[in-house]
Length: 527
Ligand code: PTJ
Image (tube, rainbow, N blue to C red; front, side):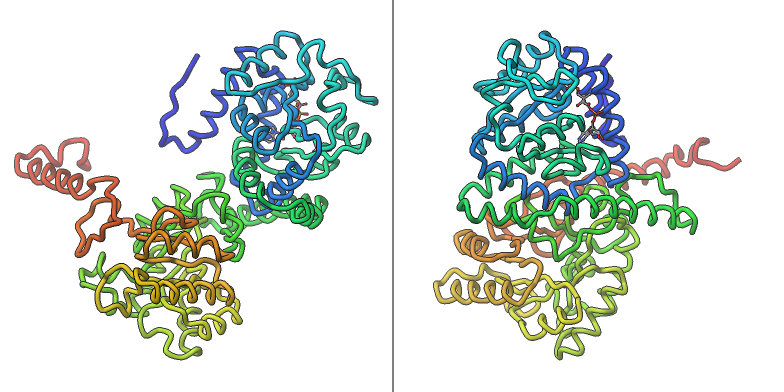
């Protein structure tokens, strides 16, 4: 039976994956025990916060480098992996030049055929290990997993095993192969034995692995080997176990202090992204930063899993109705930062340092500290003010840079960097900010060609607003994309909804119902 899952259901994604697994179970791809294994994985995923953690990102990077520098890499596919990530497996094989081999614990000709068919329908050119092709044997394994393809796992130097049993991982490692495992349980024998363990859900990890491999593909062998050699699986596993420990402690504290139910969302109360680790997202996935000035919108952005929430001094225009951002004060920034922080559980909050809040280094430090105390995790400063930024960084205050059009000091809102002199100045600012150690740079209203050059030249992510598609992320005023009335609408704004019209319709209906007596009705009245 197929149940449709409403997208607003708090566990919609998890239910969708279960449904998919059941569908493939009925088609003979997934083994009965595969359903049980998935349940075990889900439990660990819940403990980890159902997200790809920084630890997982590091393991993925090492895995991508290892696969790219391998001579004969093989991706081993079982029922669960085929059902959940067939597309990524085929893509990854292409990017890293790996062969795909079916290897099952519960081997049957029918399952081998179904998995082969599925992989080929997605574009796999060759699938090893099916039927008689699995004619070689791995020593020391009791199950049918010992049967491998002489063209594949038998001669591979690196084997990727998404969801694996401990026996075979041990056997493969003993044979001198490098084993990359994806396993949500950092305590499992597979996780503990593998060379690199990606502690993440295969559904999330494999697409990121493909992207990371695409990004690293141009690196030299030496560079790839440096990435691999810097990775230590024992520390990786320890950090994952500690992450579960910290999350449980945090949830237990929350439960006992009575500050709210701990079960509302698995990702609630997970530690916020370390802003200094944001650079890891560069070239992996586009960073989304949206503005909020109040509790309600912040809560929605937090639930929608945006990467960063900006309490922008754009509130001077959007919230206060001024023509610019120059009049916003520190007190107002603190008020709005507190309101946003009240609605956010996991998303890092960046607060703008308003005009005249950083006239001296000491003033900047004091104001930035107040913003952090109000709930921000970092501050954004307009312009190339390297000395001030260095002073803040010395105090361990994360800083986001902002160059191009600088609304706090601009006479007019217009595109910057259109002349070669101005473009070079902006480029120089970007390099200076990157060198001083900001965690990201906002590029506002500059030509696409320039933002592309900057993005390729700096180590940290660039987040564009009116700066074209090549930036590492995008930031925009949320009210603008929602279609709420504004004092100023720049060219780059695209309306994704007409909330203005929705609000007007609701208000006019309310007026009508009050006028004609149909509100309040019995249902909305105390008796
Ligand atoms: O298709 P077959 O016949 O090869 O059988 C496949 C299963 C899954 C039965 C087989 O690989 C197996 O033995 O599984 P185990 O030993 O139950 O181990 C599964 C491990 O994968 C556990 O540690 C789970 O926590 C983990 N896991 C489950 N689902 C996921 C996962 N790890 C990452 N992503 C998942 N979606």
